[in-house]
Amino acid sequence: MSRQLVADAEHGFVSIVVAPAGAQVYNPGGVSEPDACGLAPKDTERLVPPWVR
Image (cartoon, rainbow, N blue to C red):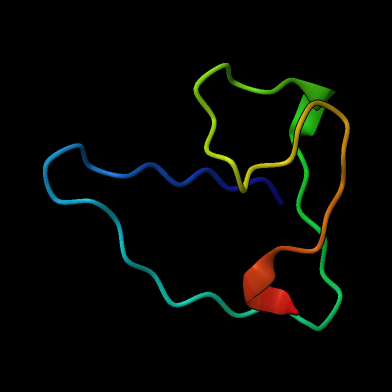
């Protein structure tokens, strides 16, 4: 299941994230947005995000 989260420019973004240990995040289609944050996976990279470690 694909999910997309976007921060509001004025108010930012806060969330509580739950995932099984070792869950990976990736970009469907293997395409990175040019303005993606530093924590976002790049292109076809799959990574375990800091909040799941």
